[in-house]
Image (cartoon, rainbow, N blue to C red; front, side, top):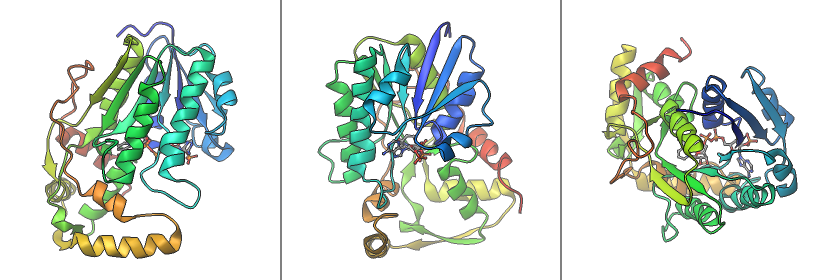
Length: 304
Ligand SMILES: NC(=O)c1ccc[n+]([C@@H]2O[C@H](COP(=O)([O-])OP(=O)(O)OC[C@H]3O[C@@H](n4cnc5c(N)ncnc54)[C@H](OP(=O)(O)O)[C@@H]3O)[C@@H](O)[C@H]2O)c1
């Protein structure tokens, strides 16, 4: 890959994908990265990533974002949520924040935007999360910007939320999984996503390209837990929580707390991650085998 002269501006840079991408960018010759975060607290978490410039800008401050984006060869928009809270709704975090970034790219004349979206994004979906991801994509598609949209499944890397859940469950001895964990996932290695983003930023193809990038091996969540437990040298006995009961409990708890795990989130987590055409070849990357991804996340786990 020839990334000479690449200047990336990364939103949501303190998140799991952002931290991994910045680490890759730091060792890619000719690539300079600017990390955009929303708070000094978030900025302080990036202090250990070498060679990056960190800027604090509010997610809805299109003028402030445009100022940071001046001279960028690509903007990588990673900010977004699956779990809503009293402070953040899907409309605000997945749609309005994308609209602010698009407006800023237009104002700054940014030649290329990468949006990380989610498998299952669909404007007609009955699921609010999936609709919001599709609406964010639509804002990009209608912007006139050259863009690469990468829809991802569950992401696994040292410290990612998905990895933490697998390690916790596999090491627990006994756990109950939603619906027995029969839903099929396509876990994607965070390093593979970062590599794909950097290729897209290097190519900067004209037009809008939507890709679905999933891991190489479909696996039921239950089997993923059992495989991780075996690699950890642990036994785990798995049972089931009926999905209807989990949805009901989530509906009651989230109504009281104003966010957290809702029936919408449970429906996302327990859906099969279907990817009819995987974009690994289109994006010019070789996928990491699942066994290797699991070994990486287990190597990074805290010892108990
Ligand atoms: N992780 C996965 O398995 C997965 C799967 C599919 C799709 N995705 C998508 O991939 C993207 C990156 O995921 P991630 O795992 O890196 O997420 P993450 O670790 O949860 O980080 C989310 C980032 O978005 C920022 N953010 C949240 N709401 C925002 C708002 N309203 N305005 C501006 N920034 C906001 C957060 O900032 P603060 O820290 O300041 O809150 C944080 O920097 C997200 O769009 C996510 O939905 C992730």
